[in-house]
Length: 391
Image (cartoon, rainbow, N blue to C red; front, side):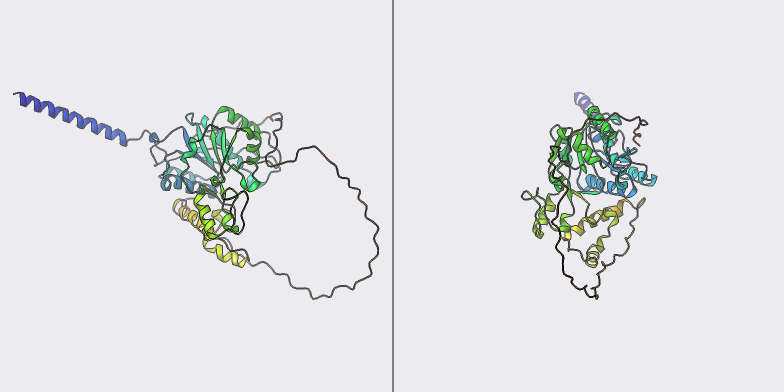
């Protein structure tokens, strides 16, 4: 009798364990919520996020390329947010949501620049609206904001573990080592930081843009990151290396081995040479430069564009299509002149030159890329600027 009861108890205990295991398995597979069809958000650290901003479809495509690289190739588990302006159409937004990356889309408008600003940068201040994302998601504490016209080459999750600082950004090494670039920023979100940035955007002067603003109003709050977090692709066009790589200044005539070693250190590559990747046909780079009588580039220069196009052709076909640029033409060579030079005439003695210009010494500060902080002017009355919901 006793063995029979013991068997029954063991069977019931085993059944109970199976039920518990089944319930646990179901809970493990069932996410709390997802963005699109991507990574379950319940398993991601909700106080951190990568942020890309896009104002037009080509930039939206490049943002998707980099989000895909972070999630699939570089194995990042950090949530990704797209800050999207009205110039990005609904087809692109739908592609973000149906990707397997897990992207949260926040609709917003770029604050206006001063009236005489360059049209090319008209919506660049949209990136600074990312400093307000903690008002959309109160759980957010730190974000990494990046320009879309780049190629993320390494996992950047370690940036979220940097020591405390309002903003950390790479050295503007091509600007004489003065200030930081805003192509990548690690921001610790707070109402205080947003108030400083928002107030500065209302008092920008002609000729000032996002980089000028950050270097001016946050000068004493910045942590400077190495240049490898924003490296220009022009090094593989000009065949030189930056000062942060080896030495203290740019090294011309770099060897192939040096340029290959440089590329291995780059965390984020910024497209500046020859234009943005969506306007460059990789297969024509070498031949076009021969026609234009331009210098020979390092093979990695072509590979950088090829790498971007390979991902874009897989991810962006629903809302972006590459348009082949028109054929280039060789520069005109001036024909030699056949006319005879005019006959020489005896020169006359000229009176001794006198100058009415006086050299004036001044103690006024010289303007640099990191101007001194100036008192804020009275804030103009402008309509309230609201941030769109996460969609």
